[in-house]
Length: 163
Image (cartoon, rainbow, N blue to C red; front, side, top):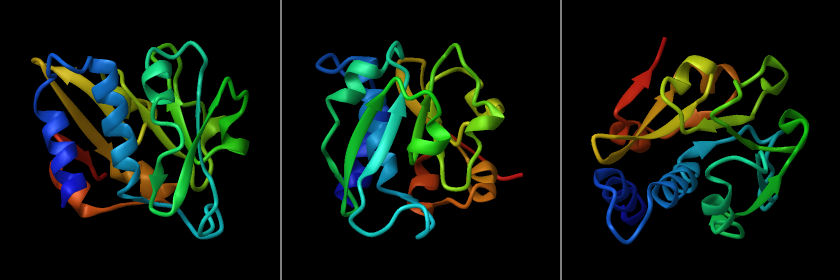
């Protein structure tokens, strides 16, 4: 419940003590607590690898989340991965890139922070709207790629795409 409260509080308002990139990064990492990967993709105790482009606007904020424990998995950030579909469990899709079909892989959670991100097969998209940090979930894309998103997170989402 504390994690859900943290997501809700972070999503409510962009506070003066935390920038929008910091809040987005926190929400993305906390959202990982509610994602379930297929056992063949992420084994118990295995490192959870998040890939992001070196120049991604959230790179610095996400890097400060490196090493956190996510449901028994240590979060490891990998910057500048050339093909996240082969090396990662989570791919942070940048504002100047789409989630290319090459990145579509069973068990790869694609997250983003751009307007209309769900249209690019992003599964969790975080953005600032009217001074609030909000997130949307593309449940259909997640399920198509073998991922499950806990209903507790779905209830906090601004929008959930199901079909």
